[in-house]
Image (cartoon, rainbow, N blue to C red; front, side, top):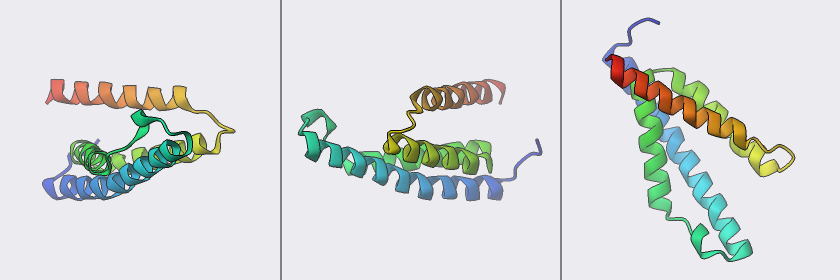
Length: 112
């Protein structure tokens, strides 16, 4: 893999943060709909936390790993659509994606 310069990292981080914020808003809205439909107090989302946390997380991944964040964003969006569809339950796949992200971050921090 070629070394990324600071501009590439910054651009990937920006794209990750913007699309991550949209994903965070969608998930918060989704949880809000479920909260209103079944009236479970634990599902009441805090939009600022979801949007900020998702933007920060995907922005950090974009800054650290570069253009790979686009593939990850596409996979997460596909996972959300499939999970909402309810014909496809992709939770094991989603958990494995999160585990791979964690292992990747651990290796990156350890080796750099």
